[in-house]
Each structure stands twice: as structure tokens, then as C-alpha cells.
Amino acid sequence: MAQVVSVQLHEGHGKPMRAVREAPVRVGGGIEGDSHVHRSKRAVTVVDRSTHDAVGVKPGDLREQITVEGLPSLGSLAEGTLLRIGAITLRVNGSCDPCTHIGEMNGIADPNEFQSMLEGRRGLVCNVVAADGPVRVGDPVSVMETAGSR
Image (tube, rainbow, N blue to C red):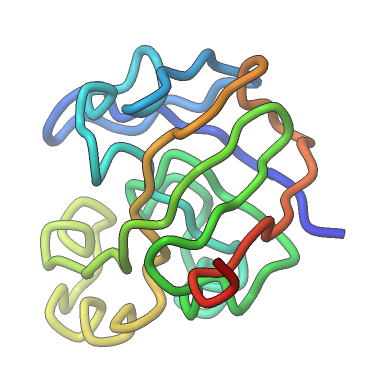
């Protein structure tokens, strides 16, 4: 079963991500305490841990708020797909394009090569569409609805 292995807060440009055990969320936005909480489309980035393993980084290093384990095909989910993560529901708004500053922040010798390695695997950008509680490390993750099933 897929589950959340890490929750991180992006507290500002260039600042390190801060890991938390749980965090409240805002419907129509993102995670409270995160600098992207007010965004309507790119509020929460979700990445599967298999990406971290493939490129040699740890959860949060790709600037994602939620790291999951057990959904290696996460990046192929279509826009409009709904993900249930514990007590919250996220809508997928698209894939997250990699950028060179992530490699720079992680001290990667060749940030452009690192960016190429992340192409098509940096996860998804989402927003919260429903919440019955906070997001927590250990929460189960499931694909509720795919864009083509409506």
C-alpha cells in the first residue's frame, strides 16, 4: 500500500525545507505554514520516493511538500486525477517541471545534468479540494478517480 513517508514545509525561497509529522491544510490551496498555501493550482508538490532513490537525494530535496512511497507511476497521472492522502483529497493540476536551482541547492556538481535526470519524474503539482483533517506521515495514499473516469 502506498503511504506518506515525509511532509515538508517550503517556508521561503532558498530556505531549506522543514520536515513535520503533520500539518493542517487549506481547501482551495495547500498546506498551512507553507509559502505556497494560497496558490490555487501549484500549492502542493507530491513526489514518489523512487525518484529520490534514482537521483540520489532524500525527501524534501526536490522541494516537494509530500513524499509518498509505493506509487512509482505517480508522475503519469493525468490532470484532474484525485488523490486521497489520509484525510485530504488533492486534485492533480499537472506535472512539476524540474529547474536548475534544485541541483544548485543540493550541491550537485552539474545542475543542468541533474535537471535532465529529473525530466518527467519530479512529481505532480496539486491543490487541496477536500479535507477532514491534517496531512500526516504514515497516511495511506490512493488514486480515487482518474481524469478519464468522470
